[in-house]
Amino acid sequence: MVRDANRDVIEVIIKLPDTLARIFGETPETRSRRLAEDAAIEEYRAGRLSQRQVGEMLNLDYWQAERFLAERGVPLNYSLNDLQADRVTLDEVLPRR
Image (cartoon, rainbow, N blue to C red; front, top):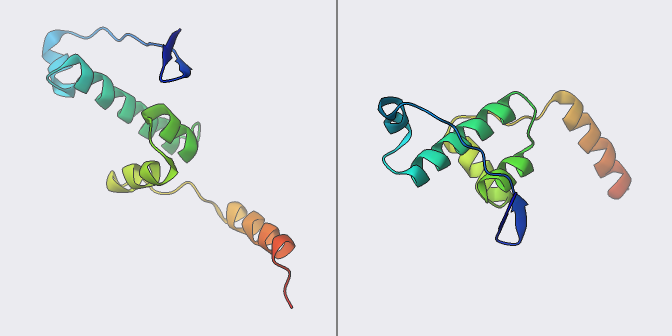
């Protein structure tokens, strides 16, 4: 485990042939970022990561993570049940007059 900007992170190493690694970028840094972004998108789509966790993984704030996902055409993970739960919460917080 490595300390990175006051947080604990785990470094993951992926071994790829050079010819395939270049698909993900020209430098180790760009490859790493691209693979992290791709993993974050897929885990979000599968429902295993929340938007906040995507942001944490990619060092983005909430709104940057929302924009990151939207720019890549990733639909918001927000179901009818989420909407109904939010309406109940709003009714509790902001009672109708």
